[in-house]
Length: 331
Image 1 (cartoon, helix red, strand yellow):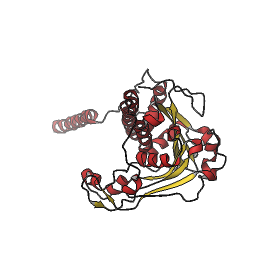
Image 2: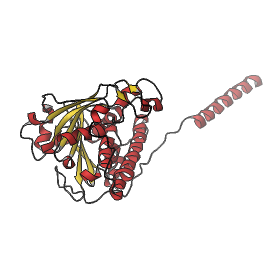
Image 3: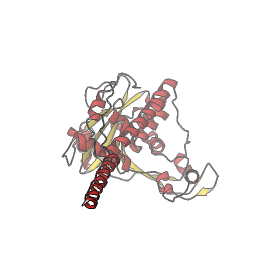
Image 4: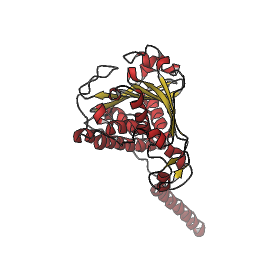
């Protein structure tokens, strides 16, 4: 009898010990309190976007925060500093920039995508005839001499296609595959990649070179738009913002667009995407032609395609779309 009682007590003791061990080792739920900055009204709205206890939202929050920091750095350390220092000239690629770097430029007859008609109808001066827009194909399809090792390098397959509309001061990009993107796919080191791409290779430099040859007054460039964004960084961020700000919307039409300034977390995060960085480098390298500008971004989805349009507003100037005034350079 005593033996049975001892065994029963021993069993209860084991169970109690097991429960205690499980309670100490079980993962605790992390309760997140969103940090709200007093400097930017949008921070409060952004903080409401995140839901604790969900792994996906935490990952998106971390990624979003990283993009915000990167975007602020590009603007404050790049655009604003270039404006203060009076830096007004980017790289000089020369008159034969496209030929020297293996680029083919062609301007076939084409029309602006019909899905963009509502956009152009709201951008003064309104496009009188969309057929008049110049569709420019820029293809890195010829061998070139690399400045690093003076070797005759093979074409990379880089391609930047888009519509150039000088009378409305718009560049609308439809395809942006950089030479670096294709060469990186070979699985080689960054140093080797640099040796296999031409000096003229980034979308900001290539597009600006083309714009200066088409527009009589390149410094009037006001809008840089991207149709059907494909890169994963931008698409994931845009999908996330649409999901939070326009829940349940399959399409986010132009009149339902989201608009963010560079002084907002959303605007800075979008500025840090590959599409926003192209605008950053245009503003950094061409202060002399453009003057001091404050970028502002609109995002929308037409026909299931994510689209982005950056308006580069002169300091002290007003937005084309609403009564927003770019009174200063945010820091």
